[in-house]
Amino acid sequence: MDAIVLMALIATLGTWLVTALGAATVVFFKSPNPKALNLMLGFASGVMIAASFWSLLQPAIERAEATSTLPAYFVATGGFLFGALFMWGSDKIITNAQRKITNTQESPNTRFGRIMMLILSITLHNIPEGLAVGVAFGVLKNGGYSTEGLMGAITIAIGIGLQNFPEGAAVSIPLRREGFSRKKSFLYGQASGMVEPIAGVVGALLVVYVETILPYALAFAAGAMILVAVHELIPECQKNQEAQPYFATMGIVLGFAVMMLLDVMLG
Image (cartoon, rainbow, N blue to C red; front, top):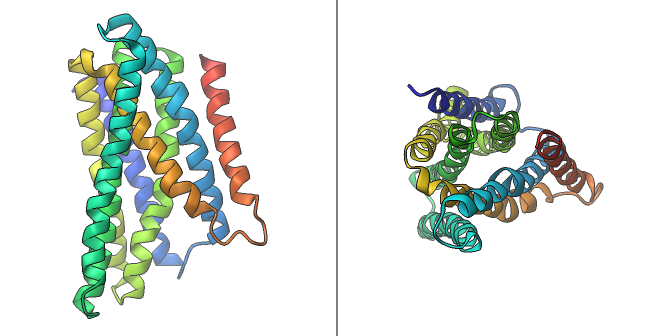
């Protein structure tokens, strides 16, 4: 296996492990600490927003200027919008399916169906996140294994891993409340992250062996990450913040600052 693809696999196995750790909270707690989860979600969103520019969009523009026959702004903008539209379309499909289930008569099977849709929704969102990690590592093949490129890929994996922790808990805890055993709740919760290693390997392979799609793939990953951060993570981390309204916000600022510091310092 190509070393780059292997690194992408290891990184996305790590993000899957964090999902499993989040799902494992059902074994030890009835519910995780909301304050800690809000801080983690805020930090992850800050990391993802910063990484979307410095580790994805900026390299996409530079690569497009060097290799593409199309204007760099067209490549970056098109890829970015397509990534966001892909996530939006995926979310619409899942939301419509959830609505149909919710409107049916309440029953144990219906409740289980809603939980399964939650698992499917989070699983679907994990696909572009895995692709983003894979693409970030795939860039190393064409960038000469630079230190800044490697650190950028690692920090993207860390940011996605951090936001996977509450996602694992978001699946396992509702299952436990529906009467599932702790073991089954954990197994279903961690299963939502299983697609990330697959998507990560696919993303790395595409970039490594089809170099022409690299700028599009980088911009696509950025668009997907921005939509997830702005539409899901930021609103979620701002819930129940009446007592400390700036707690999660400072997590966003800190995450952005850490990612920016790493990229600028190493770049």
